[in-house]
Image 1 (cartoon, one colour):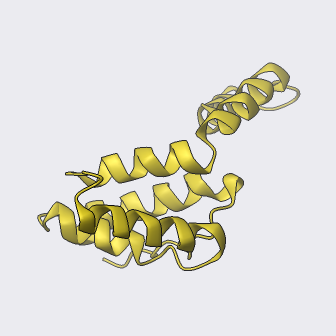
Image 2 (cartoon, helix red, strand yellow):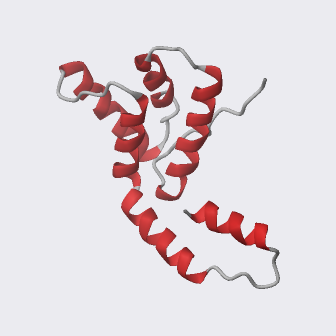
Length: 118
């Protein structure tokens, strides 16, 4: 089965969820059973642009010195969300939820839009 790899991540707030979701899907399908350290290294290898590259370099430096500990890739994803915009993203989701309207759409379309925001 083929699955798309995530795009390179530059640290843009509006792209953090897209990157994490794509990376998670790839890891779940293609790297199931791999060591967590290998999964984390693979995710970090996609942080090659902008502020994300500098953040990755700092994180790798901290890890090599034992100043930071992460045991599973989900911890890396959580750290990324905190660093690159989870709080702002939550505020945006709240605003989107307030403005969703069913309009002329069928129920399933409306529900899917709601699920996409949440």
